[in-house]
Amino acid sequence: MTTQELVAQIREKKSFLVVGLDTDLDKIPKHLLKEEDPIFAFNKAIIDATHDLCVGYKPNIAFYEAYGIEGWKSLEKTINYLNENYPEQFTIADAKRGDIGNTSTRYAKAFFESLNFDSITIAPYMGSDSVEPFLAFEDKHTIILALTSNQGAFDFQTQKIGNQEVYKKVLETSKTYENSDRLMYVVGATKAEYLTDIRAIIPEAFLLVPGVGAQGGSLEEVCKYGMTKDVGLLVNSSRGIIYKSQGEDFAIAAREVAKNMQESMRAILQEAL
Image: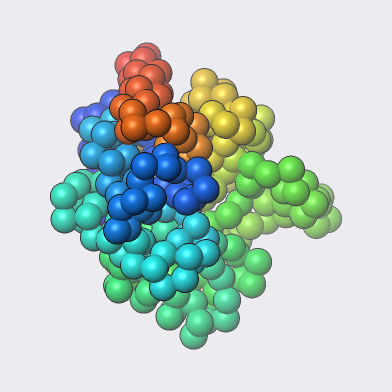
């Protein structure tokens, strides 16, 4: 998917919501455990109930790898279902990969070619030769962890190298990578006060923003300081949407939460654009 196609979908749906598919067999409604593939059954119901309200889906790969080969099969079914039935959706493999060049190339092939995701999250700690193999894929997007929403982000990301914080160094350096126009960045909603400085470095890049909802991040604050003329934001909500209900009405309940978020986004977009 091109960035232009993503922007067009955002404008059409008046939404920049991404639904996180962090599917945990211990948390899904118990009646689904009778299904042949409970994970896929859950994901399919969530997708069918919310696809018109969001612009993307983000399976967290750890929640599938935890179940071995069966979990991986569920992931394949999920991405295939999205690509076949809702090809307009922007798909994010939340894999947080990052390794030496030849290994990164294999990770890229796994998620961009074999599974046909539109994007992948990666850790930039190992530098350019671990990032650029992902950037070599046309119309695919590499989402670098820049400033994350967890408490441990302060251990390294906000520490200074000389007079510059590490996350700013990551942003600045990544702009020099080959095909850097294919980069997006993870910036947690709980770090909204940093967005002004972030936008000074990457004024137009898309930001994937977790932490709105269950982690307490403010949608209004994120939009106030992070929105661009092309919106430039993908706000992810996972637990707050998919686990709203543990009953047979779980998909309906998920839709209600997603609808509320989409309506808030619509109001913000109408005022801002």
